[in-house]
Length: 619
Image (cartoon, rainbow, N blue to C red; front, side, top):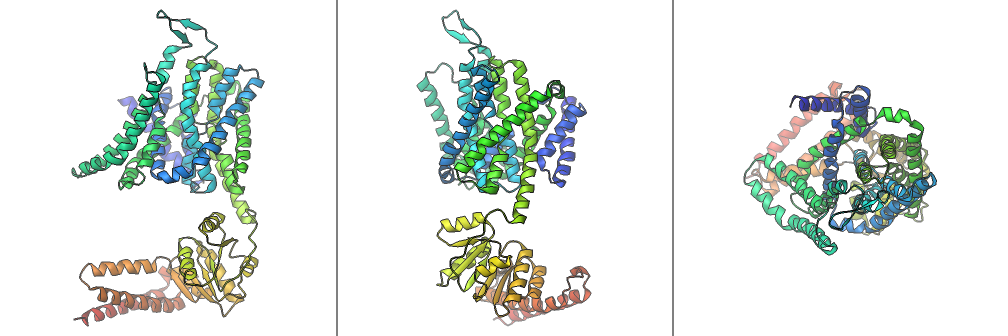
């Protein structure tokens, strides 16, 4: 018990020190976890051989992560990904496997050992890639979605790889057993490493496997709801957590029994439950365990690096790692081009998947037990896999730097050529600008949509709305969009500084132009007022007013009284903002502008008097 507590203290302390430092430096949590593992393992030798057994336990974090990802995907969305799963993912696995096999044979390996290494190195790190994509908000980009599709295909491919691996064990002589059966290689290791449905013919294994999948789907549809309602009657929050863990662990166990990947099974369960009313409860219960287990997994990867073995033959190990990442990166780059990934998305797709993955540890161990790979070669490949995983967070940092420079240099894509003009220019079509555009266009008026987010423009075009790619703050783009003839400009970008810059330039160029601007908060309102906006809309103000009106309606006021109170508040706030804008000074913090504070208090008192007077006049 004391040993367990000591080890737990070491791992947790290393994480809480290294990860925040890495996050502050902009390196990401994965690199922090890996650094923590290297520090407590090879550097300080605070942990020892238990690292490898802990790694198998921590790999369950990958299972939980895929369950959570499945909860975010509706079955229709998964079906829409079928071309990428079968095409992009399937080609990546096959081409990488065959290419690595060819390289291995060129260096003198037997074909079976070369093919085994090809299968091992064709896989990428689901844990590192998905964790980093989520942290950096890149999961919903075209490159991020493509990377996810390939990773999901790889997780599926692990199943036939494990099933096929014993057939490569031809280097060991066949042994005739007393019952007349033929055993190849280390049969005991095969039985321990793979969960097969023993004693069944091929059609029986298939039937049992399909039945297990059907059980998961049917249980997700018909059983989870009643069980959750039963748990709800206990009124104990910890029961929700227990049930959520039971679902994930139970499905993983069932998948192991029929020889399937636990990660694949829990992902399927997540997809089935994506439309469930209990989806958010499951997410909140599983998320902390997923984060801790993944963190522990990354620490064990760092702690498991054998620097003595590395230093004994560094050139071979570095050569395998660099050669793999270059070869795999080239294949990914070509496939990305074929599947129409461009610029930043293509770079993200290539850099994020060029490493080997955690499932490689499993396959390497399995192949060594089967004597497919010599122990010395297996150890070198293991170190190379670890090295590629260690380099991956650095690749993401390189992507961030290059992506930022591409954005600043404006080389992401050529700006669109504007084919027509309209009386209304809408700059920015996020969640705010889209509603403005739909209302204006469906009222019979022509709009010109302009946005610097190419993916947003492409989505708009798929829905039949014409939009143009370009930076609204660039004068040449703004004039090309029809600034000289437009009657109304709507500045609706997400970035407050860009909105202010656009308003100031448009007002200087067209004093008579009516400018409607989206404001982030009241301080931004004052900046836009000084920049020359005619109508300023705080992005949450109107929705907050509606919420306040609903509150009044449900605590005793009639709908008419609540609506009148809302109108009084709205008119008073507009007057207040205009008056306070004259007192606002950007050189003085608002909390120290005494004249501003005094007047704000007076105006707030006036609002209270006006509302109480209105309510007292009601019968």
